Image (cartoon, rainbow, N blue to C red):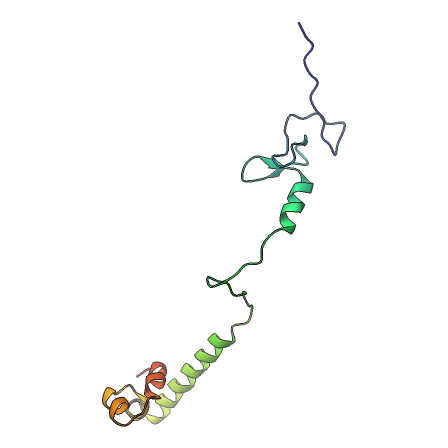
Length: 122
């Protein structure tokens, strides 16, 4: 009968026997060195190597993500300003001047109404 093979030791802690291996580099790792991965465990060096290769997030069309929301804040500001004007002047006056009246757009060549009608709240 042969002698059983001794347990491998952790590559970072030679005094700790272990049967767990890193799924990327196949080195033996102890419970203190184990990092959970989607499949199995990884050693600290493989985890740090994997984190450096993380890609920068992008939008659906490939643009960079920004932390500022200038366009959104501007549109909200325009909506609030026109709401205040409607409240002060009267809804009917503002709606008739800036609203989406198809006849005014076509006959009078007032194409700005296609944009300004979006911001009305009356």
